Length: 538
Image (cartoon, rainbow, N blue to C red; front, top):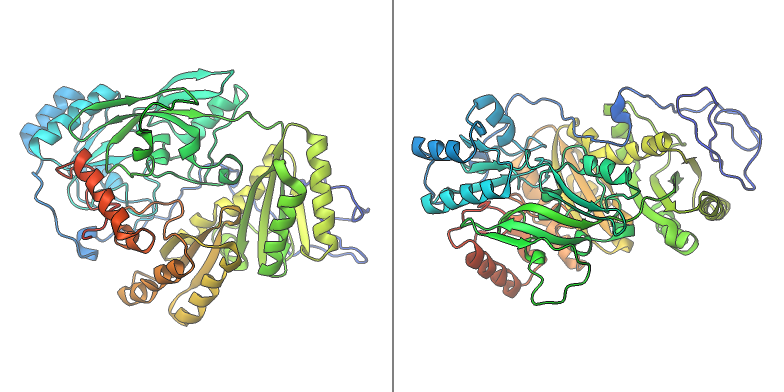
């Protein structure tokens, strides 16, 4: 048992925490023996840093969603030359009909669903969005709002020929208050760029996720994205203070307050957080940013079993308390795929399970003292068999890359069946082992990883290609299993197109009916992001 300390001339240098295990040893040495490690960091590109891990291998073609799935086009109008002329008057030079550019916008990030839209619109202002939606409402034209197109459930691309309304050019910061930490910005601002903006002013964004270099804050809010800071800062339902939204008929709903307390009437913004663009198009966001931590540490640890993972989590909460900011979990197959496809290998000895623990606070000495105490306890009790610690930014980013690039590694492994469920932590890994037994050699890999601190499991199954019979073996089995545990079939990815018909596993018929009533009230013609979020039939 040892925390690794790398040679000072190595590319990656990790600080071994003080404690009873501290000794003078060479690179990879274990207590009582000398050994050269069977691992090595490979820095192949800047993507090794914690940034946007959204590179996906090119796949020649993607089957049309309308051909792969049983779905019928609703009786919307089709875009005419007159419509294109009207759009050109509203947003001159930003009406895109080029097939190559449309091909990108029609396909999701996973390259698993594809629409056939013939027009992409790029407004810059709320007024332009309002004019576009007013015209579409009058003409009965369906609209697909699109942010960074990083979603994983097919919610950000058309199913048929819906007009794609991109927020990519709506990327301006409107205001930032350096005392309260309240940021007001347009919906198309990229999350990573916003984080850099507020970091320069002593704050951070309250959410962080692997697609940060591409995803838009408006899309994050529309999907109620979770991410790795959820454990510390909670849901966007708590940190978003206000929204500006354009409704289906072009009406601008200005709820862009910057007040932390406003108890006047219904909290309308909550209708649009997590609505996935089906109730309105978010055009601006007011969000509360927490102070930037002065000290951030990351420990990457190997555990001998899942029971030990749970005990490590309990120990973390008890010993790290207020400085615990993330607790991520991944199994051995995840690390295998990261090494195989991305040439990143683990910085610790091979283990059945791994956890990433992040602390953040205002005092480096205080935080390190607490982290040292936790590590000594975890190592001494056998909960952890190996580990390494990073304290400066580049080392922290390198360790986070192991966790955040799992999705990218999976995309290289074949067709991916993705599930994002919330289940009680004591049953967290049982679904993975059950599926491995159920599916056997029909699949390449069944892996589990995710935000253990939030009870959020990312279950992924890879195969050589899409298979209807394999899908039938997975669904509804995964959903009935999750429902039996009183879990949720979508923890943070939303429902989109792929998961809309499984809403009933997590919500009662009365709740689903009320959702349809809200949809009918705000978008009576069903023009906004049709075929998404709500089931086709009650």
